[in-house]
Image (tube, rainbow, N blue to C red):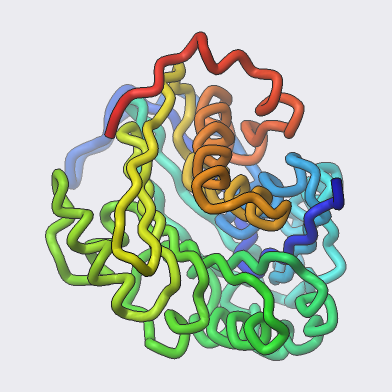
Length: 312
């Protein structure tokens, strides 16, 4: 089978993860159990996910001229990501994400750092490589104008665009109309549409988002799985797998990397979403966003009959 070719344009962060028994209340100080320095960033996480599955994956982004930057570059190379498109911004710190892990979930604060210096010019510099991609995968931890430029360049060359709209913000029509697949979680869907997404209300919000321009809406629903909608407005529910959860930090990123891989490999949307669901299920069984990204062999050989798929 032909090796999928994926370009990821997005953020690179050092994740500083603190484990604690619970989240503190406002103004409260509590004792943590451990601290970890882990390569992260939504863009880098998704690039690693796709590369681990076997795709030729090139990352376009910006690192700082500090020790974190050098460490993140080396980590990507070790994971099989092509780092030709990553520049170093001199005198600028690498982006960080402060993550609190407590009670099986996470809270994250991102400081962009060098990610704010990932500019449209960087996209144009690598236009020839984007033109050869099967899928271009985008997120929102870099300047919005850079994301818009990337989507426009990709569509000018007829490439498939996946937009993971996190962190959530209002998005212009010019970006949405160049998006083939948009993958919000429940809270992102609510912000994008201004609608209630609790319970089954997310389905009405997904319809509204589809009307705003993207060709397909795929909503991730955590332990409830996901659902996707095509232009015919029909919603297909995809169940999640009940697996032992160690760390949910990379769940959404692994889903997007798996989705990009499957679509780039020529799978239809139904098969691609089911494949992405398996990738994300395996990812949360290990600690660390990038460390938990599974290989294609692991996804294909895992005995899925031993875990229960729960209905949405």
